Length: 103
Image 1: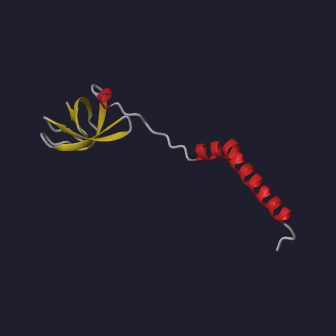
Image 2: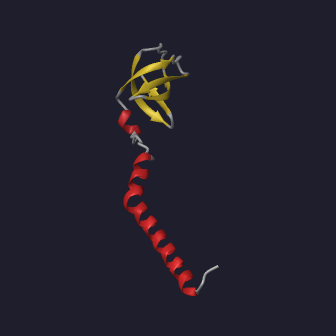
Image 3: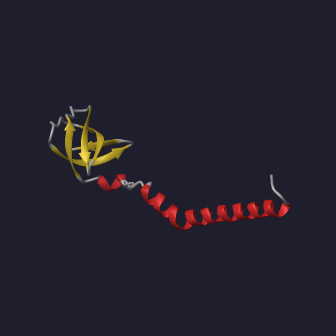
């Protein structure tokens, strides 16, 4: 296959150099592009920060039962001491788990 050991050694060295070049190319150029393409934006939530904010009712909230409100683009489960109709504007009083209490 190989005429002598020198040719085999040369091929091994060239292979190692090619692998190192590919790794360096990836680290220097490809990694940042791949990272940017796969970047997922997340929205930090500060649940205590929504207390006192206005919300829009998106599912009717019967008195002492559950409905849904939309706050800053997020839909939350909501409860209230009185009933609220669809599209009413309510104020967030408190949060317990994933449920907000509105007035």
